[in-house]
Image 1: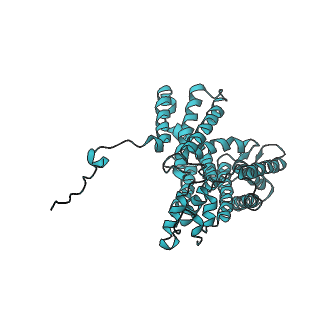
Image 2: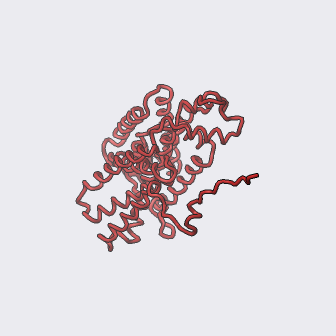
Image 3: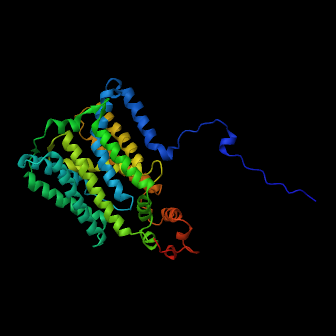
Length: 366
């Protein structure tokens, strides 16, 4: 009687080369490699100016506000919804805080809370237009941004508005601890909270499921409309927090703030969506943003502040490239992707698994 022998096992990569360390994948860590290239290139060209502690502090302190604004755009993007009003929401927060400090005696903390709550209400209005009136999110939030811009011009009369702030509030926006700007600490706290919600909670899984395939998510019992609505409220609130941070750092309003911060934020989110988990994610967004920020800083030092065209050119090319990369890898715009739905259903246990067949509507219970 012949003995039955098992087929030989194919050696894994680890068994083929024990102890061999492979470099991180370029497809998942391209922003990190780009960051290293910028550091090496501009470090060689401008060694005395670029590779200094002061340069790093400037980039990280000035970039914290834009990074938080990018996180505001990230939240609705996980549900395949776009919020182009974040720049004007941030700008509205700045003008409101400055105006109220000039014309009222309210404490700055109360004013800041009022501003964030008011902007969250604006996000709720955008959510109503998108969810209930079925207006495309791009059109709805673009129109909302124009309305907010008009409101700012009415308040400021198209002039700079500089409020009266206490020394404590100025320190909150410009202080450091062990050389780390306070603004970066606020940014990390906000990013950590959003990461926890998106990656570690059922709500986060539902948001990605809605972004993967909204109709399939709805048939699976997920309140897709409510989640989209909530993501726009959250986006507006976070954008308002970015406005509070800007006010604490700079302390004055000018009419051109919002749009100048919008495009770097968008580029960071789309570029970050192609990093790490290959979908919109918090840490990929921050890595992508600061990689691009160091590129802008290097260009400024290399060509001088007089080359005002360098920064918008770089940001425009970065935005187009980032969207192209993210789209080509399926990190955004993957409307037919049902992987998020399957992950969500598996996390609910066997009773939530759909019946035989590809129809996601076979398991409607939430």
